[in-house]
Image (cartoon, rainbow, N blue to C red):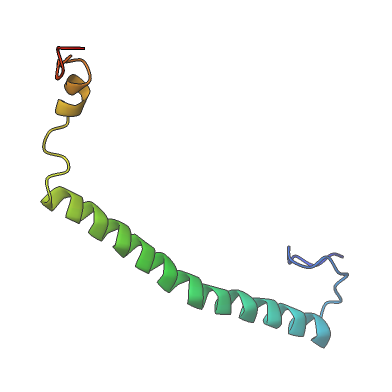
Length: 81
């Protein structure tokens, strides 16, 4: 019988202390990783949300059609050329 754990591919003996120890180490490693990754993900999400709210407050989304229309308008700044 193979271990249900996807990280290791070792034969498992049901009731084996070594098998339980391996799984507890893997579980501890996953939990340690999650302890670091969850706050980092929350921090990045808050950073993105604050950037979006800053863009809304500073008027970045006020004139959505202006830039699209400005490229079509030909201004002759220097008619002497």
